[in-house]
Amino acid sequence: MQKETGTHEESARPDINSLDVPMNFNWNNEESPLSPIPEHIPGEPLAAQVAGTDILSECLRDGLQGISGYPSIDEMMRYLHLLDEFGVRYATVGIYPGGADTLSATMKGLLARMRDEVPAIVPSVLSMCTEESLKWTVECREIHPDLESLVFMGSAPSRRLAQGWDLDFIRDKLDTFIRKTVDMGIPVIAGTEHTTQTSPEDVRAIIRTQVESGAYCIALADTIGIIRPLGTYRLVRFVRDELEAMGAPDVKLDWHGHRDTGNALGNAMMATAAGVNRIHVVSRGVGERSGNASLEEVVLNFAAIQQEAGLPVPWEMSQLLRLISFYQEMVGVTTPEHGVLGLRYSHTSSGIHTDAILKAHGLADRAREASNHVLEGRLREMARTVYSAVDPTTVGGTQSVGVSPWSGQSAVKLAYLNSGRDPRELSSETIETILAHANRLGRELTTEELEECYAAAPRGA
Image (cartoon, rainbow, N blue to C red; front, side, top):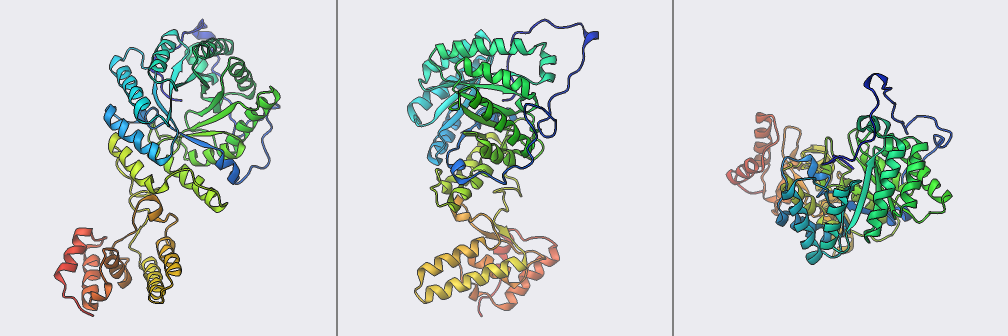
């Protein structure tokens, strides 16, 4: 959970001279008799755990808090249709906007169209513990009958000091507004900001209040991306054990993580291994500050774990690049050169790499000539993955090859082959001319420059 657009009521504030600035709890390494630091944690979740874990898109809520403008309803609906086709079944689409009437109208308009156009996606909105926020949430539920509400407050000592809250105040507000929301027939996900900086004693007290008030799910939030995988496993296991002890093992758990210290994927994996039911994600990891757990990183790893175990993958992975590319365009974020599914995720101009890829295609050609089409298919796949962890065809992409000063003849031939032409058409003089041009420029040739070289050169063996 992220930035609030309004404020909860405040409890009495102490005199400034009597303030004792508290320390937030550190789940990564701070000792607690309630929650020992684990000596061992799993390397990754089991396939069965992954198969039982859903993803929730925060793309149209937390993701939008990391950009400069707000998309139109039409744009967001196009994205929701893509999410629906990809196989996402949960999406947070708003947070109580306070007095921002235009923003409220946009969110409500989006909910109305979701109800009619993408009924398979369950929407949720974030609601603060105030009467105004509850009223707005009820209005949203009147528009979309399947709406769920994430009722939340901050919980870390630093946040409590800043707001003038104490633990009893937080528990009272959560109890009151979770109950009121449930009484209105709205399913409640109960959340806290800064869960990962809240002590085991306070987490225990808060989740007891959340469960007893009627929440069917609890969201654990790494609001500033500060926890590491060991701390994540420890926190989730602690909450799971507490729910068991309370006689509430069926209460679901969500994990909401940010990537400020680069641990969002590892934390999502470890939260799954520890027993959460749903992971919050955003395409390209867009969001407040450094962003959120990345949709593409989570689903690529979850899909691989399920495939390796012979389990079906619940998402249309061939639509993945289309999905995240549309989101980038909608929110005005450029595609990164590097990183997961960046511009160069399946691109190379290295002579060593292109030599192996070209030879793999040569083996596939021999299999085709022998009419062994099964073997040919496997060899073509090998050609795409010998130097790429992600087969581009599985995510809706293509392999690309460039020519640069670190290329050899194989790069020129492979680039020509990838353009749909026969590299045997290229003369050795043409190949050397192209390589010399790249060396003179001291950089990789653009696609246009490479095509100009092809066009200017005579053809022949």
